[in-house]
Image 1 (cartoon, one colour):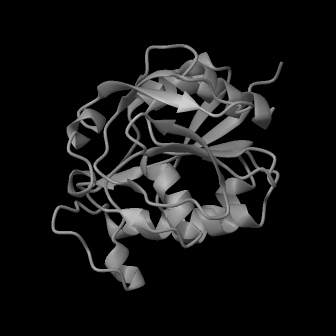
Image 2 (cartoon, rainbow, N blue to C red):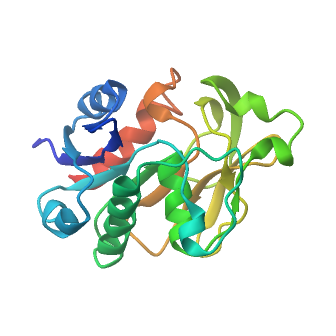
Length: 218
């Protein structure tokens, strides 16, 4: 079967637009062709016209101060060029409800924040064991019955999370209550996961998540 083109939103650091090779490897292993989408807000519509599916990749934090929300002192914000491009991408995707989208870590947070949901800007403020979600630590997630995702062990690297998920269904949580996955059932494939499937060894919570996006994009 024809391999679909999967657009990967790129980070912007030290003058370089970049994507970790683990995303490229996983998309290829899942049967897709990875295509890096540079952080150019004015090109988002044209880029989306050419790809079959999108992965909103992980990265640094949202600068919520641009939306009138006080910024936590522990926040490490992404480059403004990337933030502008990511929100432009999400806006364009709203006009393309049939375009499959997977949000990973920051990508899921942006999907939720884009719809007006509040953020937990520093998990350590509300969780005594927040470090279990950082540094590629392994922990378990529990998927809801009937969810397209599976329960199991995952790798995480984040200090923020969605505080709520209005407009979505929550389809997975960690055992300490952190929202780990969301879905918009009104769209063909619009799923966010808080963990990093592209770095998770378990097939069920790793490659299978990427393959689901690739298959939806065929």
